[in-house]
Length: 530
Image 1: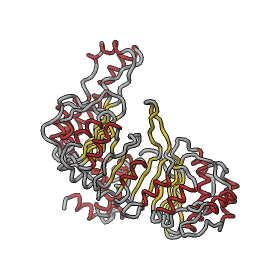
Image 2 (image 1 turned 90 degrees about the vertical axis):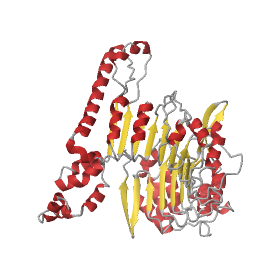
Image 3 (image 1 turned 30 degrees about the vertical axis):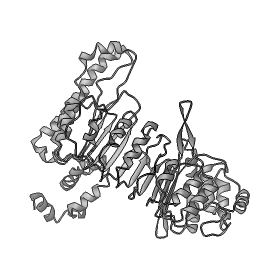
Image 4 (image 1 turned 180 degrees about the vertical axis):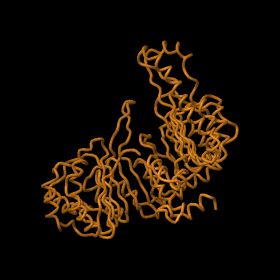
């Protein structure tokens, strides 16, 4: 036992919280944000000792871009002088941390590095800026990057807008326990690859559509080592085709279980051949705005697939007959018309839900983005997915909610969806109080609020075993969501619970309700980034 441990255990006058085992305190600090941890660390020596590993676990450095091109010639001199000063301050802080002999123990606590270069600001006066290049600072990545190798326990490295030459790859290769590498909008100069593959378990390559940016084929096997790779994210619009072409010709990836990918039309065949090389794939995510691709040949077994996230058209080939119990659908699809990209909402949701029900196991979780709240769509989910536990709907504005009389007429005339989950006609029990809420507080032409009333009245069914219901708005217009805050939500929640006794969580707009035993509590959600 260290001197600090002995001192900690012998202080009988310490407050009770200071007498807790260090493992308990460390677990508690895991719920705090970084800025809160910094405050906690100043309370006492015990708090500092138990929180420092989490404080120094992650290190983030944001660097100025040396390619800043001002909009005005009057700013050129100011900007070219400012960049070296900003870089000097960042370098000084990093140098002081790694040169302090007393901080040697803290070096080993650093497990995650993030190095991000600020985006360049372009202008039309490039000819003038070129004349000022001699005044620019050296490349920030060349100054800061060597310090990365000082963190001997570095497991995760994220690089944003970095120019990765051979020297940077040599440093990356020297990291003994590196498992995760994320490359965001990075540049890959020619002949910058290494000969020996990295031992990455997780690789993410993402980027925007601004270029030019390319990748050489020999670098792909260096980054994607089939013997180690477990998780792959590939959503860089400019280099995905090249990477997929190489991956489709490589050896199988026996440990790869997660794939998130952007697929273009020319990459469709490469993508399906790559799927055949991933026998253990458990999660497949087709990134939104991918092409509307379909396989030309039967897909591989994919016997371990448990989660699908993507467009409905590919779902009919992926989900039926496989043990998928979690589905996320994106109903806004990319279309082309005379080589001009456009967008359309997938409207054949009923047939899609049938395809989901053909999974080899009961589907427990369903999320739908750009969901049009119609009676047929809701009834199809309740009918074909009776074991659903979690339902998350991102709504879009649709036709105005029907009046109770119109709902009853539709319910009686529909032979396929006129029955609720128990096989009985949609009833009108306990609707007087909810209808009073609707007429007094809910505008009749509000789709978000109208859906809540439909569900609470029992006019639209939900799966009988539902535990979690989350409703949000897919568009940028939050008018519907904001209006919900003013109504008597607890009465709607109470009516929902009376119809679906297993319901324990309801999220509507900016509020979350959850139940403990018979008591419901409300939380105002904070959507700000932390």
